[in-house]
Length: 125
Image (cartoon, rainbow, N blue to C red; front, side, top):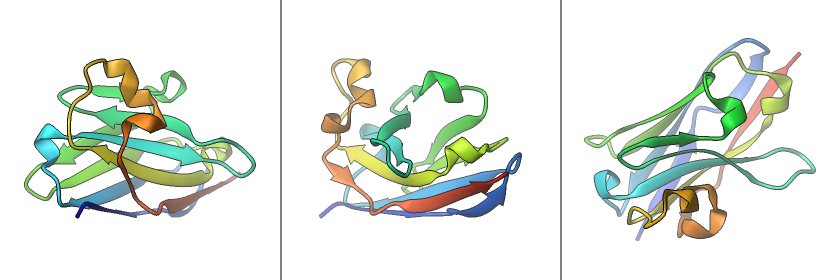
């Protein structure tokens, strides 16, 4: 049984940083594709970042967000720097046991079979 548990969200001022964690169980991180998505109030869920053997980002977030994983801890991280009020959202961790045939699939919610419950991030101006 796969479980994903996010943590690290909270309230931060604009310009601040947060590191989100996603603790995974029931799958092997090194062979899985892991993603982060977010959903802002009143908006659709959108892709943020993903990691396989390579990292992928929403273009507008490059340079501010990084994704990494610790295979020994079976945990994926999303480091968010220079946060802006528009980054306010619920952030979700997602997983698929395999790497996709096409890396473009990593940006699609439909690629992921498992989801966490999300962690709230609020950025005040």
